[in-house]
Length: 65
Image 1 (spheres, one colour):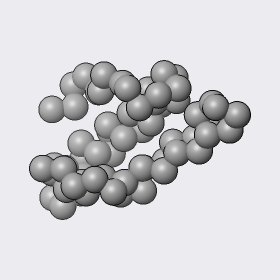
Image 2 (cartoon, rainbow, N blue to C red; image 1 turned 90 degrees about the vertical axis):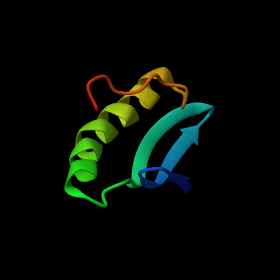
Image 3 (cartoon, rainbow, N blue to C red; image 1 turned 120 degrees about the vertical axis):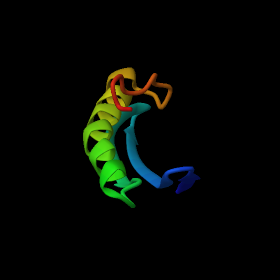
């Protein structure tokens, strides 16, 4: 788990034979309605970007702010 300015973030990844096979966000900022709304949109996109890139080195989500 990592503490961010907006709240804690925890992610679980699975790797098989050196390939990223799943990314699941276990905990994300949701302390207020705005954070929960942003997380609900951003998290699935970030998870997919990580899978597509086969890496945690991704650019982020455009329009999330």
